[in-house]
Length: 223
Ligand SMILES: [Zn+2]
Image (cartoon, rainbow, N blue to C red; front, side, top):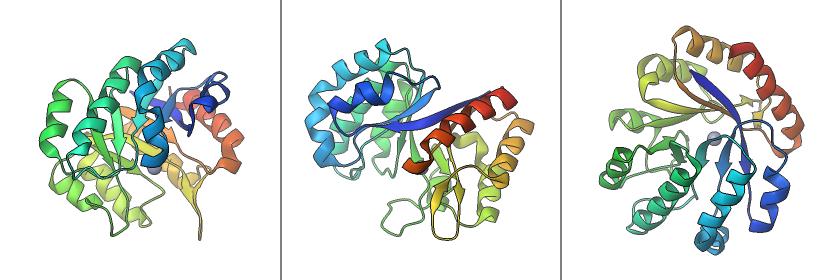
């Protein structure tokens, strides 16, 4: 079964109420993006999880802080992110890159999956091809891969390891635009193949209203 949601983030604790209290659709909850803004909220994660739970939101996945996972610090914040996910009843944590495989596998045994998002930048630890070579759980971001042929390749050959999909369209020099026909073809393909996982709409801030309307449309059409 596919679950549809939207990406919703916060940078500071004071924003949580405003961003999450009125949400009527499932979400991927994005923790503060950079270490500098993540650090101050770390000791409040338990309280934040409780606050979010009180809003009765269905949290499909957690977007972890953007921080290197190649050093030992990952064991600490990786674990606290996993605990946060567990408190919210979430099974998938999305991460940009991962190398600490031992830790990853231990986490998976606890029923929580760290997945690695597809990016094309050269600075990344793993390219999409490397994610597949190491057989790692994947968050496939449709906007980050410019070559649609590559997307079909991943969907056809690797979909059993894709646990999360970030869905949005790409334009000439912008990405994370409202879904287009290609995005709908992807969903049709997933439905036909009985794929099971989360589809998270990830739009630029100016399309936020459209994002809510689109996720409701997808839910209505496909579930
Ligand atoms: Zn993404």
